[in-house]
Image (cartoon, rainbow, N blue to C red; front, top):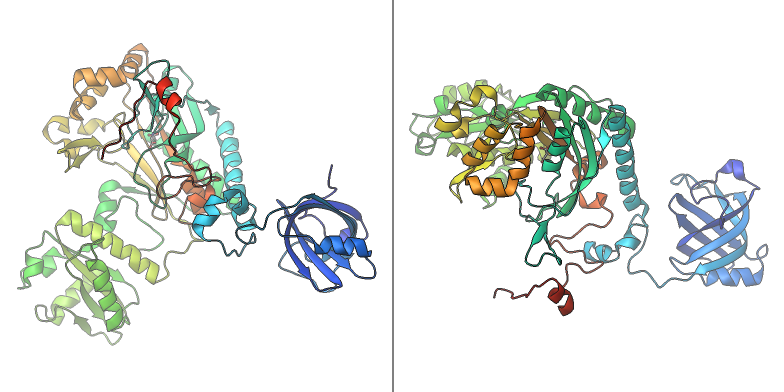
Length: 584
Ligand code: ASP
């Protein structure tokens, strides 16, 4: 071994021990006759000291030649530091070096490899392997590792079997575009990369596996955002002979286990909310329950008083921001501008201040008496000191806008504490979602989701009103996972495809294998998948999943480190029988 200890290991109790360490030079401080080197490895940083007088001259000179990120091996004795550093675990000791071996010199790195760095995002992505040397970055992957191990522990203990499913498959509709791979031996034919292992895990249930899980890569060709990557990881699961309740309790158990083992947090009860209530009270199917600020509908109180904008609106709805009556004119104008930005798209913002002295002041005093405004305040359960914010318009649009405003107010009032975790099951999702663009229904979850028995009659008459046995786990306003009880018989699956606008031939061509399997004794089954990267980000208190992925892609789906995607050689194309003709 090139070392006796790691760089994170030595403490006062090791004083006088002879040790050998190896690692990277994080920093050199050269005070002439005195040189300190911070030596880093995966486990931490240990200070080396070279001192004129007690260190021989050649060694001192050698130390003076060290540059950032040189890989070295140092032998010496652990001594107590005169001035201790309580910020690092090894801060009470240092190593008095008596032999130094440069294992590999290094070019000057493009940015400083310390927790505080001068490297911008792009540069750090290009040299991700250097960025990963930084403790703060490495810790995120260590958290991911812990989460993975704990997930496997829990799933194994609960009798789930980890089964790998293929990566070269054909389209599994999860609502995104497929990434495709050309087949050389089948010219003109393509595999699709799995958007999820959905059909395979269902087939495993038909095979009798009963409880399956997999920590698995999925691929979706979508527009990228901070919390999306073209390839991402799911904790994917499926269970047989279960009802919705069994799945919710099993995965509530997993969530609880992870919080307990990884964060030392005992999770409170996971609330439940129907999709309909989530939309009505939060304008959103993934409400952030760290704060209240529920929507209050004001149609009855606010319409018919001569205020044309409210009178013409399908919905007048608002929120009450506790303690925000002190917002200045300037702050309120800024909020108004904020809701009017094209990203939100509201026409304007009506506010009512419930002043500390009990008086009410609004932007619509012309139309509403103070009794009117008091009735609004009562509806909101507002108290002196609160600020009511009201939007109006077409119901669907205005709910969405108010949902954004609610989150913004939560942020401004400091109610979205990253150390607080509010998990929630959203249940009873609609089976279908109307798509304006294509003018047809899409499966809200995916086409294998079963409708609620009591709603099956509505399939023909009012498809939009059919509810599904589908559920999402939401934590702090982030969708962590979703799943459903599946269809497990051919006629229902066929009916579903029909409603989704598939012709019989199309359905047969794409999913004939699954429907056929359903005819060979498919057990009732259901499952769920958690977005593993997101779960890690939530645990780490971050908005971006990218930090939790060793080698992520940038906003244009590019890996700038290996420079991919890239063109391929002409003979590779020939072999694949592909001619590339880019559209202008
Ligand atoms: N395959 C689904 C998804 O990726 C999860 C599930 O229904 O189990 O969202």
